[in-house]
Image 1: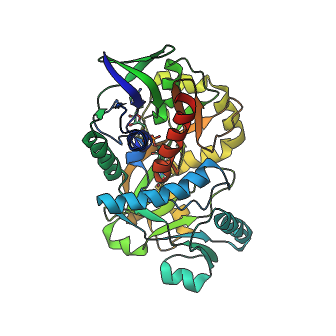
Image 2: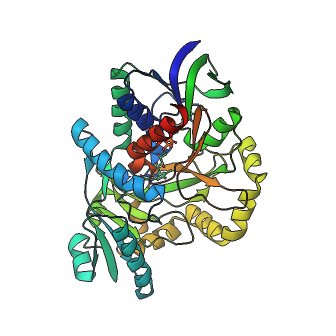
Image 3: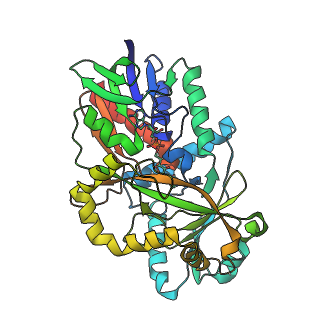
Length: 400
Ligand SMILES: Cc1cc2nc3c(=O)[nH]c(=O)nc-3n(C[C@H](O)[C@H](O)[C@H](O)COP(=O)(O)OP(=O)(O)OC[C@H]3O[C@@H](n4cnc5c(N)ncnc54)[C@H](O)[C@@H]3O)c2cc1C
C-alpha cells in the first residue's frame, strides 16, 4: 500500500485545482490524484463551452457568485503566467423582445451587486458595433468574459503538481473507500492506496464515490447532455465573441448561445437533454444500471413533473436541427440550416434533491477526514482555482 497525506479522486479542474492549492498551502504534505481515465479533463472540464464566465448571473453572496469572480481573476492570471491559450473577447447577453427588458435589467443589477467590472446596458446601435449580425432590442455588454483552453489549464496544473513531487495517476478508478479513525484505504480496480485524508472531486460520479465511502448524500447526480453545432468556416464572421440569450429563469442552464473557441471555431449550443448514461455523449448512449438508478430516484420524477414540457421541447430540439436553428435565429436571423455542422457534446452533472429541487450552488460534505464535492456545476471551470482555495480552507478547519 502506498501512503499519502491526501488522496484526491478525479482529475477534472476541481480535483487538480484542489491539489495545486493544497501543495501551495502545505508544501510538506504528499498528494496523490487518482483519475479513472487515461488523461486529465476527460469529462465535464474537457467537453464544456470553454467560456470564462464573469459571474453576472449568480445569486449575490452564493458560492457560485463569489468563487466565479475570484476564480476568473485567478484563472486569467494563471493563463498569463503559464502561457495557456485564452482571450478576453467579451460577451453580450441579448434581449430579443421588449418584454424581456425588465429581466435583462435584473441580471444587470445582479452583475453590479456581484462587482462585475465594466458591464453596461446597450441599445441596438451599440449591439451592432460589437456583434453586427445580432438582432436585439437591448443587451448587456460584459467586457470581462472570455474563452480559454480548459484542457490546457488542466495539463498545466498536472505538470505543476508533478513538478512539486506529487503524483497524478491515470487509469485508476476508485471503487471502494474504507474510512477508519486515522486513516483511509482507497481501492481502485488495480491496487490499494493509503491516506490520512480524502477529497472527492469525481464530478458525474461524486455521489457514487461518496456512497462508496459510507457517506449517504441527500442528493443524486442526474446527467444532462449538452449538444453543440459548429458554424461552417464561411459564416464564422457572424460571431465576434460570446453571444448569449436571456436565460430562462425557471431552468438552471443559460440557453443555447454562440461561443468563439480558442481553437478558432464558433460553437452553437449547448441544449440540455436528459442522458440515459452519465458519460453518454451520443444521442443513443444508454446504460441500463444507471437508467434504473435514475428511474428509481424520486427526485427525477419530481423534476420531470415540474419540467416535463420543457424536457420534451429539448428532446424535440435535440432531434430536429431545424428547431435548433430556429432558436439560434432569435439571436442571429441570418443563420441557416446549411451553416451548421455537428460538434461533440458534453454531459453536465446535475445534482437533484429527492423532492426534485435542483441544487444550483456548489455543495460540499465534510466529515472528520473527508471532503466530498457533491455539486460543482457551471461556472465551476471558471471558478476552479477559487474552489481549490475554498476546499483548502475547509480542510484546514476540519482536519488540522
Ligand atoms: C456542456 C457543458 C458546458 C459547460 N460550459 C462551461 C463553461 O463554459 N464555463 C464554465 O466555467 N463551466 C462550464 N461548464 C461546467 C464545468 O465544465 C464543470 O462545472 C466543471 O468542469 C466541473 O469540474 P469537475 O472537476 O468537478 O468535474 P469533471 O471535469 O467531470 O472531473 C471529474 C473527474 O473525476 C473522474 N472520476 C469520476 N469517477 C471517478 C472514480 N471513481 N475514480 C477516479 N476518477 C473518477 C472523471 O473521470 C473526471 O475526470 C460546462 C459543463 C458542461 C457539461
